[in-house]
Image 1: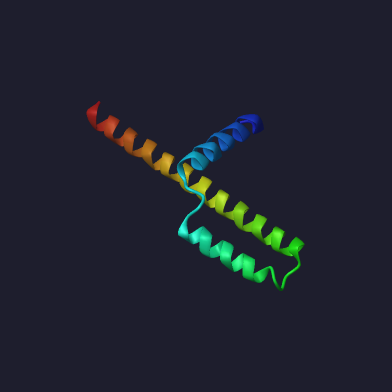
Image 2: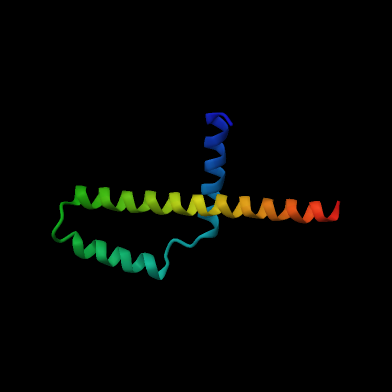
Length: 85
């Protein structure tokens, strides 16, 4: 695939995940609470960089999980189709 197609595919996956996964979960509330406590001792620029790193990591893991799930689904459908044929 070329870079433009890859970028569009990643955007489509991210949009799907954003629509399907709630952002305000118990896990995020706990993380946000800890970040707020840490903000009393850490410069805001460092805290913003940390938050961005967490978000980027989580987005990448969700994207990879989604793609892996789609690949598994395709493999399973191919296996079922070959049994029928």
